[in-house]
Length: 275
Length: 339
Image (cartoon, each protein chain N blue to C red):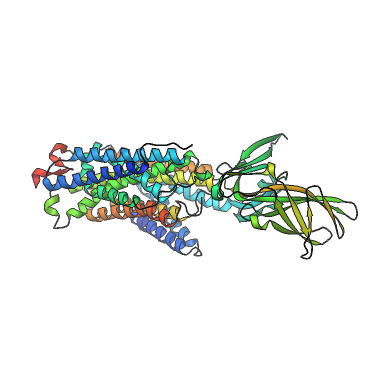
């Protein structure tokens, strides 16, 4: 059933983009003018996530299904989930806040991307009409959210190593402390990534009659899991310099990012050929 | 001692994981590459884990971590067992037809697959309904089947899409492959009557060529072309429903124009009489058997819970630092006063 809405979806979408843009600007100007803009950053980030939530709800009521099908819907749902998860982490764990200087630009890249992809709706395949999809996608988004929080810290710590940025970022808390926070985020990400693979396998068994078939998305998701597992093992085995650990976090995030946004984009549908 | 230490080392774990990732990339880029690219690193990791469990006391003391890795080992073993007992196949069943294991086409069969279990499966194909959205986008598939219970009772259920038919450990999944079947009766010169169905190409995918050839019991090859009564609408919602199956057929021999028959009509052919009983629908099923599915899920879930417990007990529950952090003195967590 289609509903008529007084405010078009695009208005909420643009409001969300503006919220994230404002949040990023507040974070960077706060650093530049040496003033604490945490409250503004959090408020704008939360407002942006809320706008995206409204955009998702309105689209859902119009097209009759959740944001699962095409790149527009994947970007829209991730803009909401990543913003929400990062806002929660930012609010509850002050030590992750330096990472906002990296995280918010990443969200801006996604925001810019969503503005240029086609937004036409597709038909939800019967194999997507299951609670398992919700679990699979839900825990996947939590994984990416924690990974994003970790890469924010790793990224800002790596940037700090550059001589030109050192004066501006010299006041960062102890590197070992931020490193520990980043890796805690990665451990959480590992748990949720594992749950995502399990829920996905259960869903795939019901939907397509096999729990694992090495399709592009499955393959790259598993490679991301392996990269994360190898990073966690390498960190405890060798006394790696901190910066190597941060690079590993970035590598895992890049793999995860490509899995979420690259592989589905290249293969048209999230699981190529399986709809 | 050196060997056990080397084989249980975490460095070997990292090497094994990298080798596994490399093997996956090789087989991903070159599907024809041998499975050994993946299997060998997995074996190395399994061996490494086995030695770690046996010889690494520190590892054994951490119950959560140990449980997680035991579950990983279990998953590898279960997956291997699953490969040895797996069965994949496909079959087409027309309305009113009983499942016959001898008609199943095997796609993959594990060395230890208990083949006789498939003989226990008893069900009959009932009505078929498939919803379509405009532009022929397939929606919900509903296939009615009548299962025969061990006590001889018949239990009717509807399967389709994410709800497979489960029987004797096998799962029968409906597919997009379905179409019309022409039910024919053949009365030979000796008076014997045989009845069967000729399956036509998948519908509506091959709506334009609902044609098949059939060789009569007397050895005459005839061409059969089906003309469905209802047209397939491209711009509106539509229901492909076996209950509405209707249409005539053209029976041709040696490329002639042929003779059109309505349901119930018959034609004399060399060696006998062919009677067109009417159209039915057939459904294509994919059959899957893997006895390890439930165990795999249990091992995976226990493993993740154990890992989460380990992270919580040994890492997350510990305070990050003894030094108190005044978040108000930070700009996005960066201590301003220090700069």
